[in-house]
Image 1: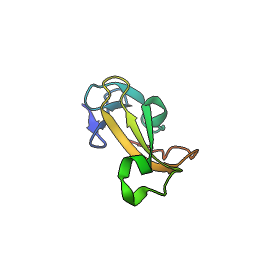
Image 2 (image 1 turned 60 degrees about the horizontal axis):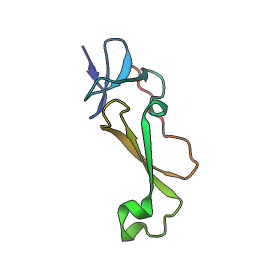
Image 3 (image 1 turned 180 degrees about the vertical axis):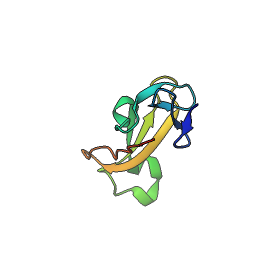
Length: 90
């Protein structure tokens, strides 16, 4: 049985974090999973309109499933910052 951990992720019967849409495994629970996802980065000033016009060094990061391209998570970060890792223990 899968355990849902977010709107887009589950921990599968093997104890791996996986895409809820297609089941693609991203790595073991208890370890960061974002490195296994496909990454899309957009400068926030291009993503958010006028309120973010001065945010050239702020990025919108989108993490996609490598199996089906479902959006798994997103975050804002300064260019060069490490990922905000969500570590799930089930």
